[in-house]
Length: 153
Ligand SMILES: O=C(CO)COP(=O)(O)O
Image (cartoon, rainbow, N blue to C red; front, side, top):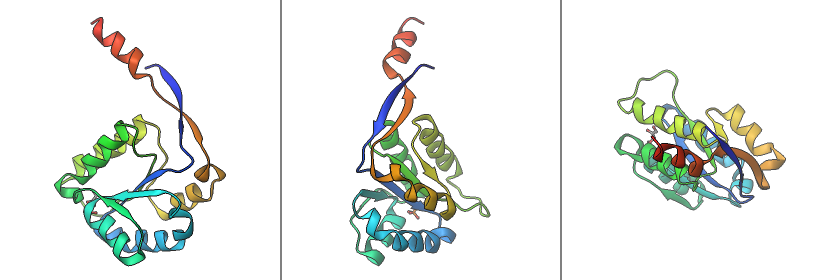
């Protein structure tokens, strides 16, 4: 795979997701950092996004609920370059019927090299970075060269 440099913008689109046992943790984390988060665009899976919007009075674009396709919708936005950061407090103690969707979402976040936090300690580090509010250079797959090579198969 060839890579090219591409910057994440200063004003980021941040996806917020939490499994049910982790929703209280995510709500506390968002409440703690509300003043910083409200300068960015927020989105989330249906239930998580709805709870953040209602409990904290933040604007959150709500995709479908995770088990009904919301994780996949957020993954597709990451692949399109429309989501810049993933805060996903997944539950390490519970098996989910949609575990394949969760794995697919985490894979796409790795492919497209966006910052991911799966717990509050990592999320605190991400949000306290000076890069959180400024452009962030990172390398992503060079889609044009990838496609050219595929066309020669
Ligand atoms: O299941 C989820 C992520 O895998 C979260 O979905 P909800 O926000 O709809 O509960």
